[in-house]
Image 1 (cartoon, helix red, strand yellow):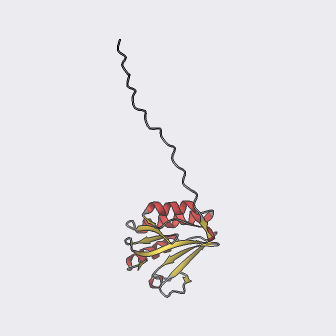
Image 2 (cartoon, one colour; image 1 turned 120 degrees about the vertical axis):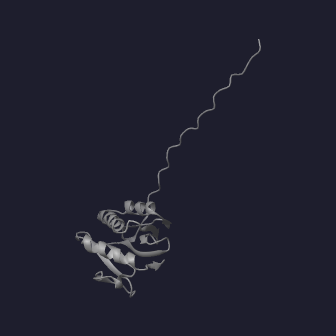
Image 3 (cartoon, one colour; image 1 turned 45 degrees about the horizontal axis):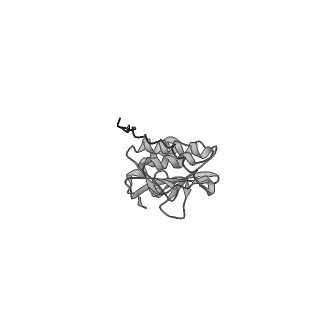
Amino acid sequence: MPVTKTSKAPKKAAKKPAAKAAPVKLLSGGNPQIAKSYGDEPVQAYIQAIPDWKREVAARLDALITRAVPKVQKAVKWNTPMYGTDGKTFFMGFHMITKYVKVAFFQGALLTPLPPDASTQKKVRYLHIHENDKLDENQFMSWVKQAYALDGEKL
C-alpha cells in the first residue's frame, strides 16, 4: 500500500505582543524629550508625558488652541509643541519650565493687549502659567486668534 504524506495546514504566524513604548525622557523642568515630528500625534505624546499639574494645563492649552483655530497645524520641534499655519510657519508654542508653563507668542508684541511677560526678543511675548493660576480662557483664545492671523515665524 503506497504511503501518502498528509499536508499540514501552514501554521499561522504567532502574534507578537505589542512592543511597549520606551518611557519618555524628561528634561529640565519636566519637559518631555520628543523627537521632531509633525501632526497631532506627537503633540499628544508630548502632553501625555508631562508630569504632574502641568499635563492638565498643557492639555487645556492644546484644546483651546485647537478650538480657536480648527485648521491649526501642529508639530513638536525642539521638545516644544508648536502651532502654525503650515509645516514651516508657526505662531506659538509652549514649554515646561520648573515652576510654570511658558506659552510663547512669536509675534506677541503685535497682540492686543500685550501678553504679560516680555522676552529678550522684541517680537516675542510670553504668558507664564503657574500651578494655581486661573487661566483667562477668553483672553487666551483672543491672543491665539490674533497670533494665527499674523504671518507667524518660519522655524
